[in-house]
Image 1 (tube, helix red, strand yellow):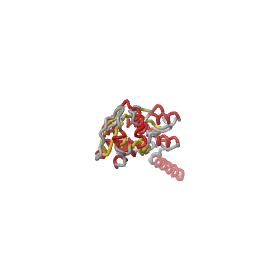
Image 2 (tube, one colour):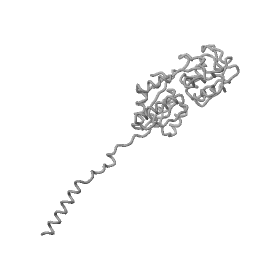
Image 3 (tube, helix red, strand yellow):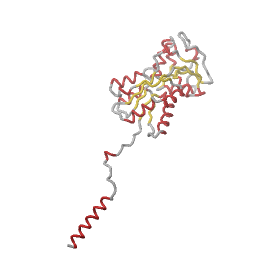
Image 4 (cartoon, helix red, strand yellow):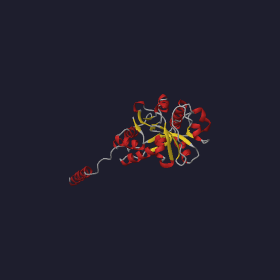
Length: 265
């Protein structure tokens, strides 16, 4: 009888210890997933402003975005070949359409984010004076020097530039003097270093260059296709991509874009 009572007491004590033990470990499905860093493929003209916005986004508690800057044409082809982009920001609608036709972007996420202007720049120590209008003699203004611009066969900035020069009747006279750069920032560097007598870049690029270049003039808006920057998440991307795209469309980001010289849609 005594032995039975002792076994019962031991069982009760074990039950009490078990009831006071640690809480059950949550099952894996119950643990909230960590936010992943978003990978952003953006046109090279966005380099400075996107880095600034990336720092601001990270300061709000998100993982720092990973950026890949290049010509929109190059980025679109990288995405087509399977590069791991979460968000794509193009410097024209054509390359966004290119990916849309291949169902490589989320069509519902696509939005027109920014606008820009096209300008003629020259080295600050060798400025150019010319009135950018139809019939202008840009070839003479170059004085035998080179005209830097992004590759007009594929890069948006170059396509806009060629379109404007053709409309003004100046393309045929300067075509042989054109240095075709891989992107608009490369074209800007040719001017900054004095390797080109002038260059055609975005107004925001000229602003980012500070005193290294002098703006000779702004091309009329009706001389080329409107410059717009569409943005979209790529197909199959999750909340991190959507979150960053929404941030770019926020009033906080708008203030940064405007300070950099971009127009808002």
